[in-house]
Length: 124
Image 1 (spheres, rainbow, N blue to C red):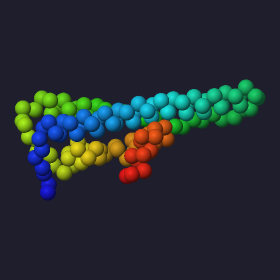
Image 2 (cartoon, rainbow, N blue to C red):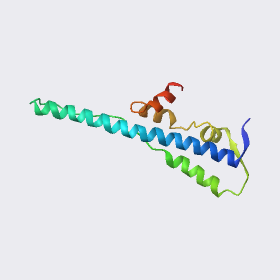
Image 3 (cartoon, rainbow, N blue to C red):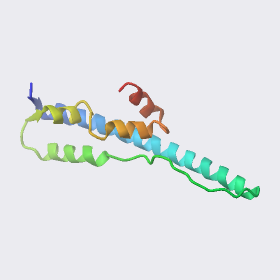
Image 4 (cartoon, rainbow, N blue to C red):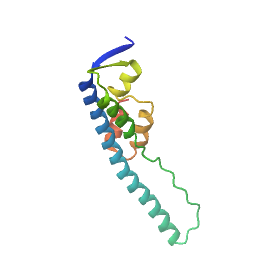
């Protein structure tokens, strides 16, 4: 099957649920990222204050917010006058299955800071 016709209301509900889950993961990851960044920087400060002279490098993956991708689809659905929407396999995977091009990297990076992301990433 290359395309499927879906009910707009059901599709909108699926996209909204996926958006809400993405946003929760992102917000949880931001909190975890900030906490980890502060811990690493405070460790460097302590060593410097003790007289250690060393190169300082902190490299942490920064959580990425893709909420706008969901919002764009939701806006398109809101403005559509059609009651049914035809989706190809690629769009169905994104909108319904929450399988976006960036999803694996997003969950991988976020899993360092988010239990929710780590759980989803382990199931991929």
